[in-house]
Image (cartoon, rainbow, N blue to C red; front, side, top):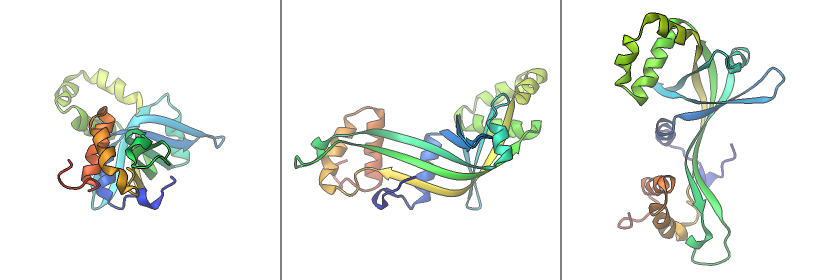
Length: 209
C-alpha cells in the first residue's frame, strides 16, 4: 500500500495489536481470469519463533479456496479504527479536511487445511480468541453434526512473508495534536480508539491525556 514515511510503523508490535483487535480481514486473490476476488473473514494471528501466520477458513461453496490452491500468494488486509480529520484542529485556516486511519497489509503464502483434525484445531483457535466458553459446547455437539459442519468449510494457514503497517495520525503536524486528540476523545468509539493510539505513539505531551 501507499505509505508516506511519516505514517509507516516500523514496530511489528503495532501490526500485531491491530490484527488481534480487528481480526475481520479482507483476503485478496485473483480468480482464474486474473480479476481480483475478495473474501471478508476473521483471521487468527499466531506467532512462533518470530514468524507470523494467519489461520482462517471459508465456505466450501466459496471458490476462493480454489484460487488459493492454484495461486498461493495472496494479500490479507486489516483496517483498524478510522475517523474524519477536521481542518479545525489547526491554528491557521489554510488547511483542508483529511481522514485518519490505522491499517495492516500482509503478503501471505497460503497452505490449505482440509483434513477434519486440522480444521477442528483451526476452529478451536478461533473459538479460543473470540468465545472460549463455546469450546465446551462445540465438543458436546453430535459427531454427525460437527462432521457435517467441518465438511462444509476449507481451512487455510496464511504464512506472512511481508508486513506493512500504516498509522496515519497527523504525526507530521505537531501543532494539531492537542486539538485533534481532544476532538477524538470526545468522538465515537473509532475516534476514541485513535485518541488512545495518539497516546501510545507519544503524540500527545504528558498531562494532556
